[in-house]
Length: 617
Image (cartoon, rainbow, N blue to C red; front, side, top):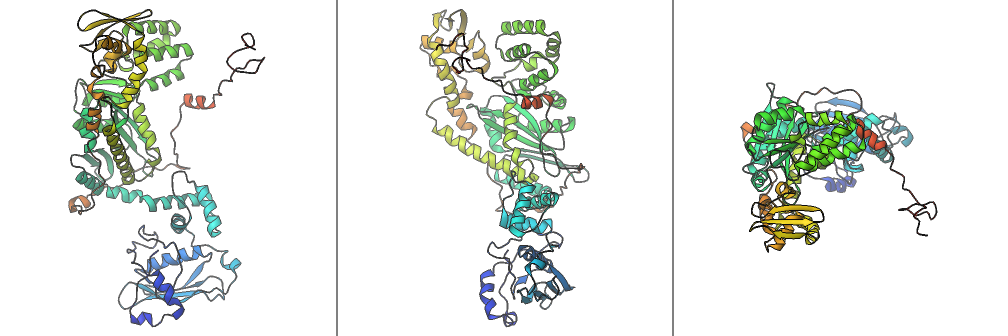
């Protein structure tokens, strides 16, 4: 902690010669002024070399001097009693009677600065006595010491880690809940307090938009100036979305900070099958009002269109908001969530496998056969699937262009990436999101520019697996554009002009299927030209052409922005330990407890893969 400042000749005369070198070593810039004595200001920094006191040290206020005394007492395993305390004078002495350790500090003239006038730093009491009391070891003081001298404050650190570390370093026994408060305060010193973070939101969003022109930002507070909703879509994402397939996946995940809330995410997938974030929102909870507000802001980024598809889970509020804000768009539901609901409500592994096939099949004839089999196996399941609306969960009945999007996994994956920062104050959370997008855009822009193939590497890898299969097929020309492709018992017709195939994989995914590859090879047509432009390297480069810049701090924030009031929302804090993970459904709990199937081995030779009757030995 930089606490010293060179004094005038009046103060210099009272220094002892042995203390001059120590004072010269510790002299640095003064810390900022304190707001109060009950809370240590975040700007006060400790020196890593020493927390010793010295004659001549200067402190901006009496509160800063008291804070330094507490830090000194805990670090040196002692305690003190206050002798005299006035606005201009403070004297303390070791709490053990008869000990000569003492400090005296006072102001000079009319100033508020406190100077150490007298300091006797040698104890004449026993270490066992003076270390038996630790009244100054408050969570704030221990939090400062832990952050600067002991350990980290990452998400993997637990209160037990903090308690053990402080005990070993300073000989102080810290019970669990006190260690929890110490860790919480230490994290606030690193990331800032939640209350200050809400106060800083208007200024932070203004600086982000100033550094990223074209960024869409919306902050809404209630009648009492308390935070309600927030929306953020970076200009780089807005400019890059036209080079993506028109499919938006939305999802929400809870925040674990002091004031809770829900993080809403809208994302899509680029032509290389990477996650492409579009917009973020923070709301109080997932309900009709919050989702409608989020989609209303998203509508300013992505207008309603008949070719647009929106994928989500089966949350009713999402469905209502899409119907109201995006009436022309096609809505699809995540098949993974549908499958989980089926596993909970209905039994039967065979019926479940049929549902998975029906949801992902490309041809209507195959879908009808599978649904007939489901109806025969489980009539209740069949009725449930019909009630869930086959247009939303089945690929073959989807009215719009869904491409390869059958689940909301890309949004879930982004939620997983942000899981470690969801407990941070809101401004710190937004800055982590900004930093993530900055890294992703820079890395993928460089990768796209370095690609040597016309199509993206993800599509090239997919086509590589189909090329060998295409060579095994027989092609019969029908006319200039149509070709009959046969292989074994299968027969399909490919239209190279319309880019369709009767297997419908080519139609839906917009990537040439194995039959289209065979037909193009026979007609000497470039197979690259069959893929949709969304999968080309040029589109990928254009999608990541924009940059995500950090906030602009070079210029001051206008007064009307800096003075805008944004208070933390009201949150009822339940008793007990704060929950950090969501409640798991019965299926997830059952899957965790499920034992893996034991591998069968031959009783004759002890090897796997066969039994005694087929043993080769």
